[in-house]
Length: 303
Image (cartoon, rainbow, N blue to C red; front, side, top):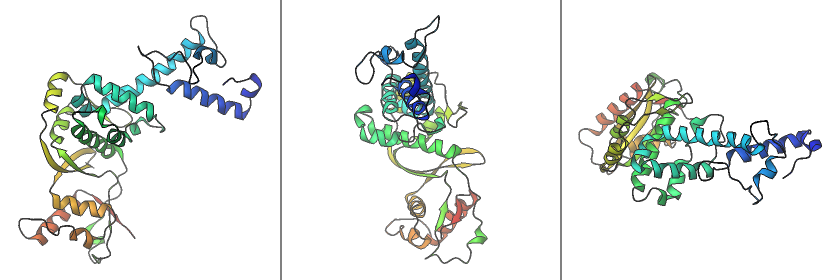
């Protein structure tokens, strides 16, 4: 693609120039973290770059553009690195970096905030399990939990629903809304305590997510790979500006999941059929909802 001076001064020319610049900046780096020397069509990139980037007395056109290309990738890698300390501990740095580059190449940032960088990672891992083999189930669990942590940290928190607002509601028609920051997870490994330990000395990246420094990476990799395989139900939520992982039993998970999907209160509680629940069922349900209401998990009634 070549831009003529006249065309570049039109609105259409400006759009074409912006697209060209964006394409060049977000292209994956070549070996050695350098800009690729060939363009998409196989032609030398220097020829194209000379058409829209001026050299200066220190750098060629190609070298000037390469600065932006490298900094774009270094920034994305850095954000990915600090957003997923658990996944990195499971895979190890080298394997994690390869996965990150492949993911980012196929899922470039389309958001104004880098907070959303990993929004498609779970689906990517589901479709590319070879990248995390032989620990794919564990890696997928960790990616789901770490994304839930990001969601809980800065997703919207609506005004909590008060108990007296639904006292006279009909259970067969009542549909409760759950907070946007609340994520319900059914995991296959006990990974929550491990991730909490990784984030214990974390700071916060300005866009949203937790960053962590790992002083003993090899030790943590070994610990991560020994994580116990066990069904684990979790609610990841925000309370008093902190992110918490609350363990649930299967009954609680069923009821909350049904409510989150739009079921009426009556149908949500009907999901408990067939489960062995110790104690009085009615009293258990009453205690559950009292606790969930105190945590502010309900934020409205669906009409």
